[in-house]
Image 1 (tube, rainbow, N blue to C red):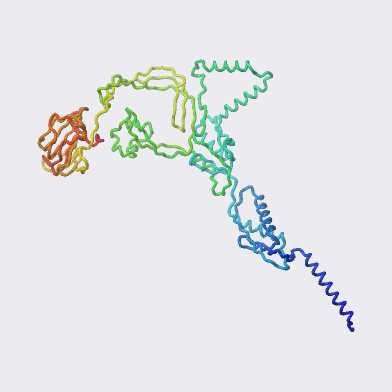
Image 2 (tube, one colour; image 1 turned 120 degrees about the vertical axis):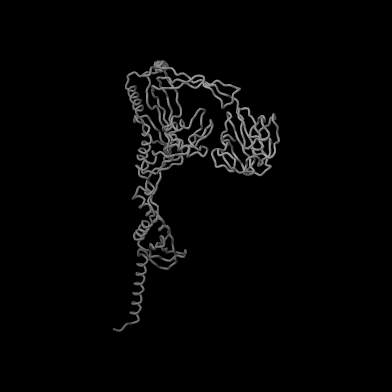
Length: 530
């Protein structure tokens, strides 16, 4: 068939129309992007380095990310933490396709789930001073604190209420320990008052209150007191906050109870009181005497002298959380009357004399007592009836401070102590009655305490000596001197030069020999030096 010029023109027009229709179809296809002169118009989305797909606008990817986060969060009541980093790579094209939005969203959702680092479960954190514990629920917190309270509440009267702390801006809970029995009685009384057809009011109600107060002021018999625990609370401020924590940070309830109620040994001190003995202190603090000696460097043995005001290190069992309570208790007890003292101004404080021996009494007592854990902190006697009156101990005691004693030389090396020894040289005693310090000849020797010189000269095996009598009846002796600087009858002050050290008499080398005599008998001088 011969194609004419007209036929060629018709065929060309047909092709053009088909191309136009195809172009319009392409433009109308989903995902097709037409170039606009606005820069990047196709964006490839990546999460944590993995490609999710392509979108036309960054806002589309942001919305997908937000929706995926919300979907994951809605599927759990816990706090979900995830590592997510979304990046874009943009390009400008004339024509192109975006990926199916549903497919891109599903890719984003899967990437977020793969990036979940940990899940923070809803939990509660309790804080008391430096102690903290994390538990799964408020109910667990109540059981924990109830276990602490029940340790001291043998009557099972008190319960724990966890309430909102009104003084805090944020959601912080605090704890009240309440008397459940009293709370129940008050609620019942309130209910009965509301049920009365004509409840008391005005002057009638006021008169009822006054009569009740008069009854309280009347002298009570022992049977009129309500005995037992009156009030109870935690000594420390208790705070509870809601939090989201990894499951691994939550503590099992039974472990938390054991930890919070267990007592730990805590280092404390005990101040020695006048009249205390080490055996009495051991009974007071419930620690064996040998253990007290081991804890204190100042105590050599259980027979070491202790003085009023001296502080001894002791260990005290204490729980992590302290509970304060007030109790009213009845006792039939043996008691001692307070010691009565008669002061003697001409006696030293080390001197005492018992005029009257004590005799214990018997009494019936109702007492209000405050405790911190098991330690009694305060006691007030509400009612007392004597069965047998106690007889007080009467003691005369001195008020004058006794003189003190210092080391008679500066420096020196302790060469021989008080007590039995091997004789250091021929003729020397095997029982040493003083303390020796090795020191070069000519070292200054001073008076250990102020007093009057009663001997200053040669003392046979002691060589040159000085003896000094002191106001408290004691005497000090200084021996093996090279030169004496005082004479008999001189009154010397503490620290005054009295001689120079030497090597006279029976001596194995240059030194100073020092003695303290009490009642004419030598004692270990180191026990009396300040």
